[in-house]
Image (cartoon, rainbow, N blue to C red; front, side, top):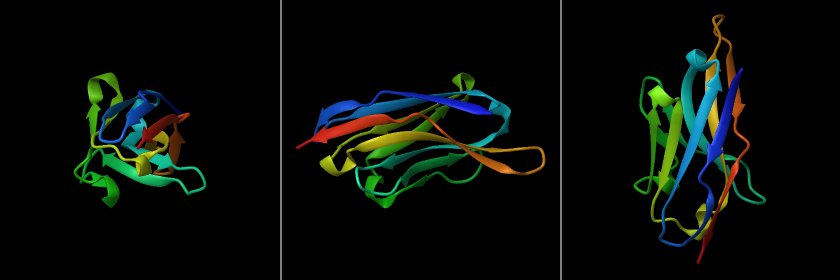
Length: 120
């Protein structure tokens, strides 16, 4: 089991910045990717950024050049630095962890979500 606790959401004006944090606990050793998803009202949840333990980090096209995902492995924490925020970035942001068991079964874990609201 992996537990994820997010922080850092809030209200910001267009053009502003926010930094989200997510601390993972539990079966940390089994995690092979950390990332962020978001869900705007009335829309499906979408991937924002995914950082696997090995391999390339992926971003959704709409945030490339504005958002940066990073990890502090010593603190089991993943961050999402969001710059040049726009009203269309308004959503609930969810921390995500993918883990793999010793039998190669993959599991998805989600944080509770943190609201990001960008005013125009």
